Picture 1: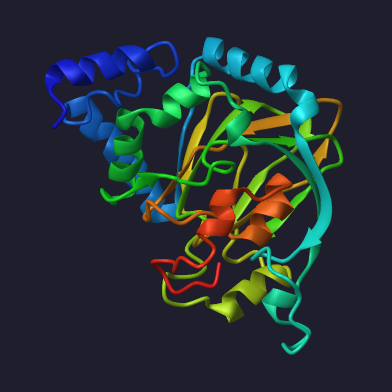
Picture 2: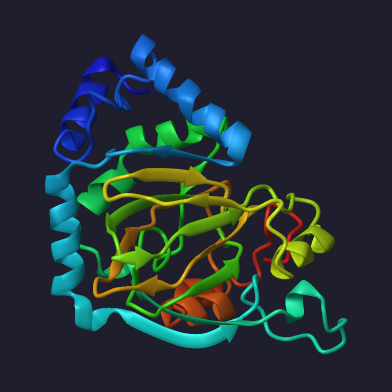
Length: 292
């Protein structure tokens, strides 16, 4: 059980990273904390995500940016085609089936196992206060930090010209923190709750892939903004980046299952490799009925 002293210590560790005066994630039971949670839940209920402007302090953002650029040569760059599920083509399905819809992706990932233990990203992600805040916002108190060693809290990197097409995540919930804006483009688009834990809802997915904008929401994140959304159930993409600046985004991820990780194929496509953990846990059943 967390005591008041423990909460104070955890809050102190976050005080250089998060604007705790504006976003009291260390005081969720206070009036201000309850008001913040109500706002976050309202966004998740109405448009499928919430956005907290200037959640991360500029000094912490500068350290994150420096970490990415110092390790730039270690970024895994991918240029390939994938469907929304990061699965292989299934020729036995109809030509217009979502699993046969492939788009070209060009982007990079600074994998989670490269991030320093002293990084603000690591401190934030490993914080019990942060995990509790995310869970309470989602009205899901049974969430865990992800066991995936590469995808638990990576940085996503997009150069001018890069595009990240429509997809679902392998984990339940994703938090995004924009570290550096592109000059133009790089807009986050998503179709909230497009599928459910027990239903892929392929017709609805197909409509979005065919160009329907009826379900699509847009969010133009600014540096320091934090976003929470249901990445496993809400199909999403990032529009093409243009200009001269890269787009950097931190991606702390959470799950409802403490053991499962990305499947081997998805890990290879996104992070460039699969670890022993991915192979060892390949046969573990998902807690939902989605194929991935």
